[in-house]
Image (cartoon, rainbow, N blue to C red; front, side, top):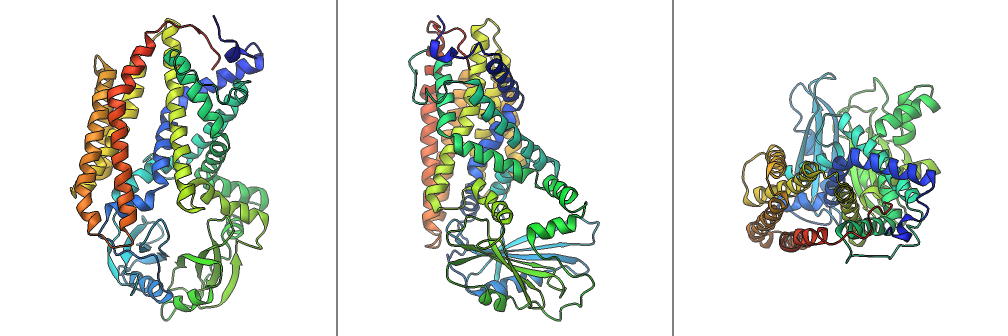
Length: 514
């Protein structure tokens, strides 16, 4: 007997087309969407992960203009003989990252590859304390933003996935005419397919506004390069420099006189201080060129924007304030894209809210696949190898991330990216070829829990010895890892057994609309 609520409106040709398009898009891109969603949840805490990798970092939540200026000058002094300097960037501490870093971007010539080096700087003096090396955080971030594919194609693919996810959300709404009416309907005691369907649909409804914002902004950030080219073509007759100036402010003056010394960063920083402003970062474009610009970026109280900027010539002349309060609507909207995507507004309450809804999006993707596998089985067309491949991919990613955490906590010299990708691939293949994939997945969950527990145990001595400003973040990170380990213990012992038992129950609803 077919469930009346689930099939309401399902005879409509429009609804059927939406169901078909929703299924095709989901099945085609599910694996990539899962990867981007899970790593996106972790990337929200990229600064905290980087600190967890380097618990000995000199930590402080405050920094003086003089220390920032000194750090920038010290980084500039690291320019290799014969190279040209592109920019120096000083990143201030904030509530998520209690340490200062500075970056030097240089290259041998315009045809050479960019050489980018980051250092941790002393928050009191600006002295460079050593390179800021966070390969695990970098691995997770690169997997989220580019899937570890070559630039810029990886970023473009992730942007395309944002478009696909946005379309999936909309088609899912149209494919389920009663989805809002049944927003709190849960039938967890029925068969596994019905339970997965209800959880999938309910999480989709509850997180709908967030998921729409997240996917739209992710698509925008991923295809920013294409967007810039389109803007130049449409509004500036193909002039990309004019388009860039509209987005990022005044551009350098060509053939300007060279600087006799570094720009007066401290004066610029003091000049840009004010009530309601929190210094974020300083970008000095080729500090050896007087016609280039130095940007002092800061957050404005009550303004949802990645940052507001005061822009100076390197010679010291103030040019303009860019973005923030008083800026045109287009600039304000553009500035809001990044904080809306990464949840960097509203402190940790917003960040953890984003984490929960990002994990919900990951679970929606996973249950979408499990619904499809279960439906095929009930229709007499089982796909055991496809399901094994899916479980291998998802489980392998979690196992690789857990192994990476142990490598970091133990201080092993192994290359993080290569090691994690190898573990992921080996686990995926192993589960796929096993005669009982569910049992293999359950043992993998137990191994993940053990690895996370080992990582916490190895890391705690360093967390206890860390600076006072770093300890809350380090302890919280270890606490979350420990809770995650307990979650995998539960998954290892119960989840698959429950799923197996549910799959043996009589199927009352053979073809509910999904």
